[in-house]
Length: 404
Image (cartoon, rainbow, N blue to C red):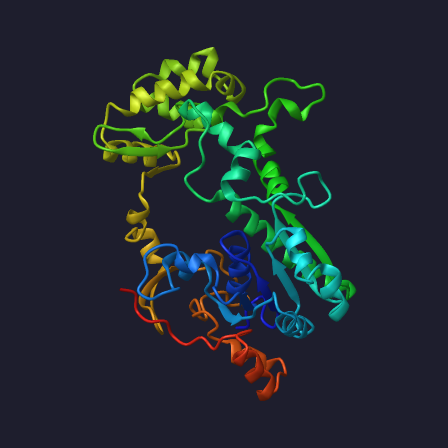
């Protein structure tokens, strides 16, 4: 079956995580993603374990389903080559600051001039027309600015970052959805457009969804955070021999839990009688849960929660997930042979389509692996390709030597 985005060409000028995750999603959905890299390549080519130079773990995981072309966009010839390619693409994605992309001569106005139907997506720190519009932004900065880091203080006692590049990845997910929405708009109207995806505003929207709380009202009707999510006792709970992660949420869950824990009278406690009361007294409630769960083994609690139909999971490490039986059953982790990097592990595309095939069609490319192929495909003559190669404006993707 054809992939959902089969036939869509994406010109990808992104690096690190937010942009590459966006374009990986588009590639997983079937788009032809052309990753444009400088002669040095995306910095993630050098982050993490590796077998070969410029083919490190983070890059391999974030850049599948893409073809790589090297273009030195600081040269007139490199910029001109990119615009020739852009004229035949559907989507243009970058994650540079507005003034940086404009300095390269690749603003929306410049690209629109060669392709009025282009969907042009800019991923950067802040809305460009605001006072912070030209400020640099990275994941840690946005976690701090958006309230995510301060929310952690309710649980740990001091502000901290989530142990994941959550701002980069959520922005990448939002960006992929925005690009697809703009493509749908173009299908209906024939119009291309500029799509701005700022990290700060995206993550404020994300963190405020439940945590705006009392500030939903004007004037505010209470604090601006959701007590259940920020309770210091909301965490994986220690059992006699490990950890367990239950979510006791509905009235029927609490009734069953108190009954099976040997303290049914707690359901009659006015502090815990319904969801409104439980939310107001969540710290006391979760402290009771913490104390009760420490009295039995993980296996005992799993059996109890399963019988009571209370949602629960054991605590996994990332290493545990590789051998998780549920993931193994659905073949979620794919061990595949990369043409140059040997056997590598990839996650499956998490969504499934009954009408369409989303999946891994090609593995992460070597730097410039497809430069000549792409240039030829977009109408560059052999002499033009030779000129770009001879002047180091492009590169032909010769395999790097093994490190060390």
